[in-house]
Image (cartoon, rainbow, N blue to C red):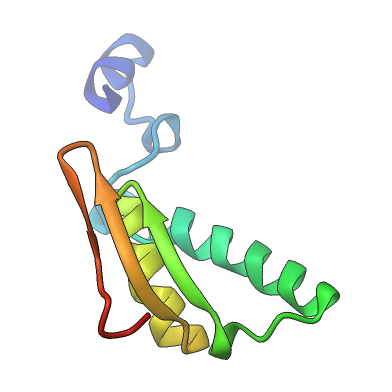
Length: 98
């Protein structure tokens, strides 16, 4: 899409599209940015209502790019226990961790 827009503009217009490789001005954190932003929101909400994320269990509905990174970062950043994940083809629940 960026190539086509650049052709129409008669010059390279790198800022015209998101999801670019870093070599063309894309963001290094673009793969997990949406999940990371969602988790920051959850962190702030949990703090305000007194929920310990370290003691929390997490179920992720939708295990594509965002869901995968949300599960990974919830564990890595906040110590959450990921107990279930699902996508359009099925789900898994980890009874050992529940």
